[in-house]
Length: 220
Image (cartoon, rainbow, N blue to C red):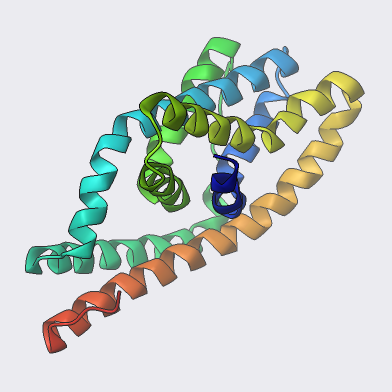
């Protein structure tokens, strides 16, 4: 089972690039109960991520089998998804200065719920997570072992974000200026990096579909 982590860790490193979650946790750390609220937000996100993995796992194997033996309709869907991703990337670039979300009267309970919602909204773009699920299923572990590995993956995913409530607990109000500075830098990178990633994914899907319709052989 330990060999599995040599594959999962690189996937995990790509997965934890989540400026939206980081920014939300920084905001939660600025409320009246910063440690509890930010911890609740992270807990909601982590539980939602784990739950989605458990629910989606049975369908991942079917998806991978279908990808290995695609039908013509799959390339039509691929073309549509590619166009949507490119459109999303363009819109994201155009609106990168107006993407800040305001959360009012944020309590720990609301933070928990919003943390889960942020996860659910981002699931369609969680390609590294789908890749991790695929690797876990491919290893042919028992059901219990697979769940434990998935749980470990989710806990490791949450670990870097736990630094936010930890810093607030240790540094108190002095941590807020530091967290805001870090968040500004993360947002700055994320505002450009995420649209680029989405755009490249979209172009790859479009190219894949176009090549199939021209040559009956896709890119992948």
